Structure formats: structure tokens, C-alpha cells
Amino acid sequence: MSENDHFSDSVGRDVSKLGLRQLAEFRHPIRQFLHFSEEAARSKGIEPHQHQVLLAVQALPKCARPTITALSQQLCIRHHSAIELIDRLVERGAVRRKHSHGDQREVLIELTPHEEALLHRLSLLHWKGLRVPGPALSESLSAVMRHPAPERRRGARE
Image 1 (tube, rainbow, N blue to C red):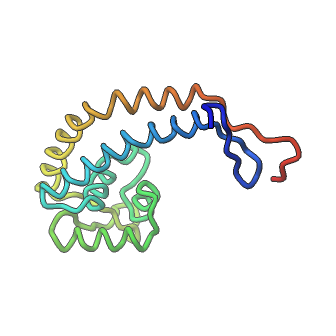
Image 2 (cartoon, rainbow, N blue to C red):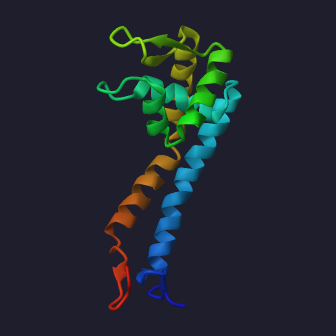
């Protein structure tokens, strides 16, 4: 097969071998960073998913409130999975639930001061950790974005 060989999906889009390679080269630095992130979290005594919750609570857009629903959407997880993560974080004293001042039915999540400090230390590690895969990630994303989008073959069904 040559660089221009194509693979087709069931709806008739063609992807060149070069396009596949570019996608793989884009995924590799992402995986490197995610692996680094998971190990960094574990080295500080917290599970990677719990670290992601802490980060999401602190980094939600100003217009968003740190509710279970907002966090589950931010983390791309199911609502009940977010509840389980929050329950575990409450048990370890990392976060607390509090009722909203405006609506007592609304429950907000906030980090304890200890976890804010932990998140700060982990964030510094992550910024340093991006130094290695960051340039490769940027270059590979640029290559993927320059690659023509998969074309639809004539006569292919939706």
C-alpha cells in the first residue's frame, strides 16, 4: 500500500493512510500526557478521576455553578458516576457539599483548603509535564487540521 491508499468506513468516507498516521501521531502525545497526569495524581495520593473532579470544580467557567450536573457534563461522565466520585471525595475530606444561598435545593461542591493546595501542586506538575508532549501535540494537531477531511464517495448512503 502507498501513502495514498484509502480506507473506507461503512458510510463511504475515505481516509488515506497518511490521514490515519496523522491521527495516530496526534493521539500519541495526548496519551503521553494523560499517562503522565494519571501517574502524577497517584503519586500525590489521589485517583486520576478524583483529580479531574477537583480540577473541574475549580476551573468551571464563571457562569457555571459547581453542581453535580455541571461537573458530570464537564467531565463527560454520567450523573450517577459524578455522584459516586463526589461521595468518595467527601469521605476523604477533599470536598464538601453546601446548599446554594439562592436555592436551598441546589447543592454546590467546594474544595477544602487542603485539596486546593494539592490541586495547586498537581497543576504545577502538569504544566511542567506538558513541556515534553506539548510541542508534538501542537504539531500533530496542525498536521491533522491541514489534512483534507475525509471525502464522501459518490453514491454512498448516509
